[in-house]
Image (tube, rainbow, N blue to C red; front, top):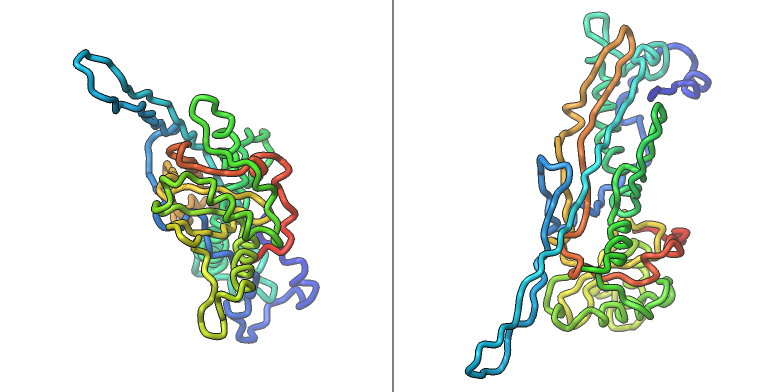
Length: 335
């Protein structure tokens, strides 16, 4: 059940007293607002497919010097690329009447209103469901998720709802026909050395992409350490309003700290539009199926979703990022 009032009853008593309490007295840890899926340029696609199929054309060199005879050269190979959507859901149930004779009684309704219309139900919809879905997805699934089939009769886990971007990096590196780019020699990112490591990683990206707007993605802690290193270089003076940014010098590349990568020492780079976010049965918590069974309220919502890369050749990572050892302890992580 979603509503637990045991501690409220223990502290404030098992009765309702109108003391002017309202939503301003319901204070919790704010939900994280930054999101990987909010990066400008990411491709958000609504689809009717359960497996979104793409093809990556691989072009062969065609230019040659002139001679009178016909000498064929060139060609295009098409490499299949699938992004599989997975079905997600929320199931929740509670008894609104549990709050009536407690300090939270102001969130109950009067005798003329159905329980599904009580303020407690609206509060759960507006404050809890929408925000918790977004936070669970960001922190557990978008980067770190590895799909695992559910166990019948047992509630599942947020980090198993679909394959996240890290799983896509691992699978892309293992694709012998059309792999992603794996940079060697950078080592495991560390706060003390990440400035030089990130520049070394960026320099391993082909000069062909120097003027391309790439994003280099790391945890917020590593992005902060990078900025601190730029500050400590003495080139920037925060007192004069020149706060160090995260643009990689001499390129069009930008470092981004992703909440979805918190707790890792991973790094990857790509074009924003090469990250694909797919949804089927797109819905919102406003459209939750609300069912009433006697005095119990049940809330149900399900949809299909996935993330992936459109082109492996436009993805770079390090060999350390695609091994299990890349899972860090989150030391110093924050925004």
